Length: 74
Image 1 (cartoon, rainbow, N blue to C red):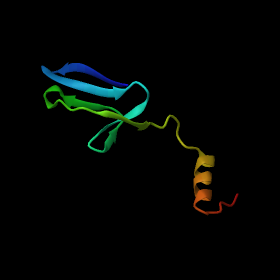
Image 2: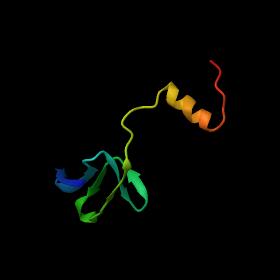
Image 3: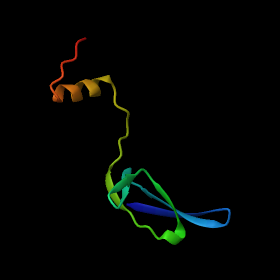
Image 4: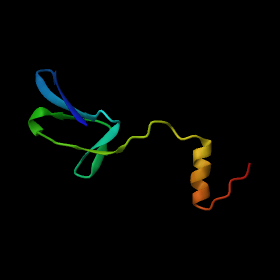
């Protein structure tokens, strides 16, 4: 679900938008981990794909290369 929180910096109000499900927030085809906009902009976002939770390891890179037909020597 999209969550929006209002906060103030130097007297100016902003809106932080993020997904409580760990998804990207998307606006106009662009994905963001979270968005912080001036409140007067009134921007709206939708949930996109799930954000990666872990960094890829060597075995992930080798598997991706194998899908492309690249042989990795040990």
